[in-house]
Length: 116
Image 1 (cartoon, rainbow, N blue to C red):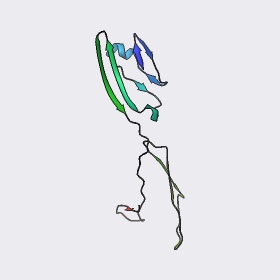
Image 2 (image 1 turned 90 degrees about the vertical axis):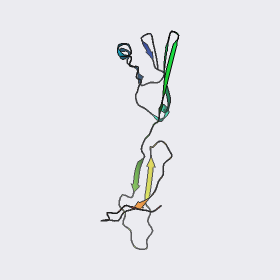
Image 3 (image 1 turned 135 degrees about the horizontal axis):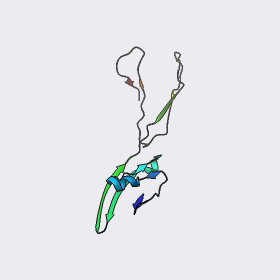
């Protein structure tokens, strides 16, 4: 986003700087709407004037918690039978997650016991 001589130009749809705030109180905050993973990175606020220059940077990290689905939702085991529990994770970022299983028996107030 560039603001110069009272006009703002956006290179990304959904960015905005309030021109009234710039002139009245020096607030040059950048508003980012509809943030996605592609918006992650280092943002630099550069201020240039006649023979002066200053800048500050900020790192923006995007995080999206995983959506977790277990199937089946309820499973009855029969002695001696083999059953499978499926855990599906999706729509999360960053992609470096750890997955583990644990068990807590009904009526047990203790911490869950790790299975994997």
